Amino acid sequence: ESDVCSSDLSMLSTISKLVAVIRREIGVPIILSVVDLENHIRPDQPSVGQEARIPFTQEIAIILLEQGLRLGVDYIAIDLNFEDQNIKRPLSEKGQTKVIAHYYDGRPPASGWLQSDRVALYSRAQSFNFDIVRLVQTAKSSKDNADIKIFWEKLAALPAAHLPLIAYNSGSIGIETLVRSEEHTSELQSPVL
Image (tube, rainbow, N blue to C red; front, side, top):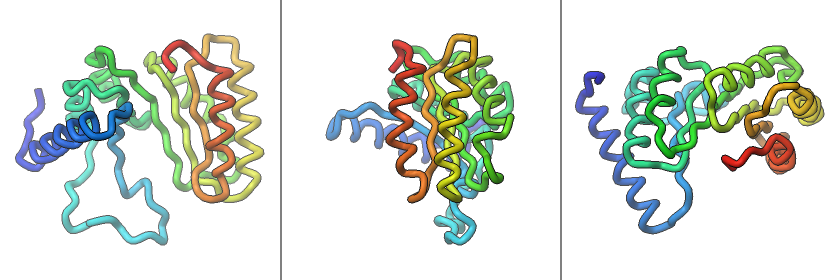
């Protein structure tokens, strides 16, 4: 097992307390997702609590996700950009928890959904045998909403068995794709959802 420092222990304790409160007070399914905030903010947004932040590493993320597994959360989300061993480790320990393959592109190229790497990301998730795939990009224009429809159709036409897919554009421009993603998720549905 990895060395755990005092800041890691504090985060583990915080996760445990939050999971207990959510279960006791709210009673909704819990999705634990650990993200690097620097990659999830717009360039014009101020950094969140930069002076108090613990540097993000894949190892810290995996330690936190493993805590979620020990607590029996309903879902954990693992970043598809993680190294193979950091994806395999929590997948091998998942128990009843469903594992979401997650990818977020906050600075997509033009026609990001039509790039070959998007289908490659879905295929990467399939190769690790995730339960669900979630692909998200920040919408820069309404063309991104049209492009995602082509992406959904491309994946639906793949010959292999399909993992459930949640794919949408984020931001005010992309809000309609969040709603429509549910329709396309049902086309690729499996008993996990």
